[in-house]
Image: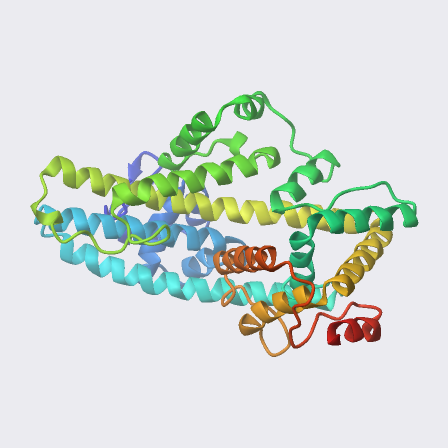
Length: 402
């Protein structure tokens, strides 16, 4: 599908952008759910102010905002590639498509703000329900400290579990561990189908090929890839595809197309279209990566909620808290170093907002601080302050001051 075409599919023919507004509300709602390219077309029509107010509200409903952001992200990349192709071929439609691209970029920024507002509202709801926010700097720093000293943390946690009379369960190393353990514990009930078994048995290259095929066909999704046990492999394949495609697409980074090379207009058509096709494929991979990220967090959230409802939740939480307290008391300088690394990104009340401390920045900061601690490993390093345990504040403060 070329997003610049005025003819997305509905039933047996494609609708022009202006024709989308002629659909009544029921037909419009069905149209949005029918195919991904319909959603993309509706998003472009909305960006161009063609839609009726009721249609705009349906498109921007809270339960559709993330999908709308995906559609606008895809539309932006697809339109940019279309402009590049039209410019190369001196197509007179390039000016109109450039105008659409500007409109879509403006709409995407607006939807990004809307999704950020929605996330903040959801965070406030969780806080009102007394759920500890995972974006708290102290909570994050304590978790990173466990990753900095994994062997000692595992030993202390096992001791705490024994003391509480609980069967041992190691802390998940990453979000994929959480999902896989959650599935094994029955918190995620997705069955293992023949398609899932087939993908689990495949090698790395074969899985990557499946993921590439899934991305190329934006209107269809391979349900097996969405299984909890395949999220780690799906993530790896998406990252590999981005890494392999960026140089071919002459993209400026793994997350932005950027401008084409200066000599592009003089390239032979075969070489030029190899670059354009790679850029369009990269846009499709980004859409799937956004979808994958949301699914992973949805799975992890479900596991967390169901574990909270389990009878042993309070005992496990207490054992984990006591373990982290002991680890902070043993390594106050390292704890302080992590907290100091996080502090510049925190709000006044100590929260790490995703708009500022993005997932990519969080991952980079974590890698850097863990590498830093691994290189130092000196017990005599003293920093201004340490993370106080949730209990035993005075004792830890004394340790940190030594």
